Length: 381
Ligand code: G3I
Image 1 (tube, rainbow, N blue to C red):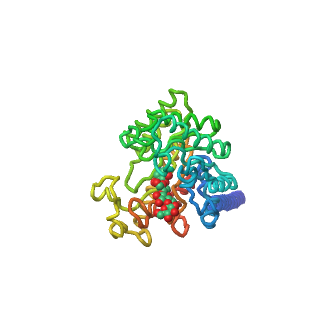
Image 2 (cartoon, helix red, strand yellow):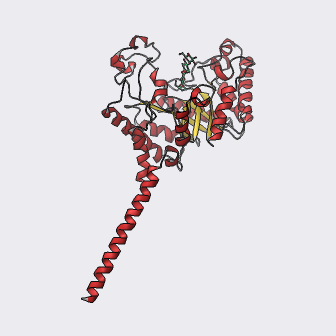
């Protein structure tokens, strides 16, 4: 009897202390989980960041700046380093905003991206007047040497060439291709490597999940590699929607690019929740969609996002991040194209003046369900 009593007391004490321990662990876990941010949650996986606009860079948008410092560990300039802004005339370089941009990244100890050196869009007008190959080569040299050289060791990663491919994987007829031929891409990468040998050099484009365009990128990277030219990564822009592209198509591209021995990055991630004009009427993307401006059927969520769509967005982001985590050994960076919904370019494209909800933070900077969902993937682990 005595022995039984002792055993019962011992067992009771053991159970109480075991429950106590379990509770303590649970509480500790809750504390850690509560303090997770995007950058702490994915710190072992990949850099995670955002594109930043003028008001972040000049310090006026203080609330967004707090959020940027708390959530992200990499930055990309949305517009200020594009050719028309940083090098508007042949002998004029505007470093006011880019100096502030780099200082912002350094202050927060971030991985700093330069976007973008060679792109057919947002070009300085003088480039479009050039018609001979040698002059174009001189101008590429001046642009890349000067800018990459100025930020040598401070900008860690460059989108060297942006959107050089058509949807079928052939080379786009940009001013650079027309005047210099195919070799402008190789030349741009070589110049960037000379100007800062330690910087990461990437090719960046949209719709890189498409099999035909994927084949074009694979060829482009192989051509550079065959010439001994340094290329470190492929940036998949990732302007996606609730419906597509499929996870399988994205995965096939991750595998195809990493098989080449380069890093894969998701450089401009957002997920539109609005109808696209070409989905509705089969129109070509190049068409002008002004006729849809003010049409309420094209702008169905002007105030808040209904729960049903909020949930779809969260599920879509969860599926996307599950894929990213599956291939974290191949993916070095994930960057959202904007800090919060109110600042997304998708409010004005392809139709001006709509209310889109494509990011993880809403217009009041509150985290959305999609944010909780992807952080949740790390809590499970
Ligand atoms: O700065 C002027 C302002 O002075 C003027 O009052 C206003 C009137 O419309 O326009 C302002 O310029 C706009 C600029 O963004 C800055 O807000 C341009 O009109 C507008 O066309 C420009 O759009 C940018 C777009 O690139 C240009 O092609 C978007 O913000 C930017 O998010 C977008 O980013 C690109 C990436 O660089 C490459 N990949 C695709 C991505 C989305 O298009």
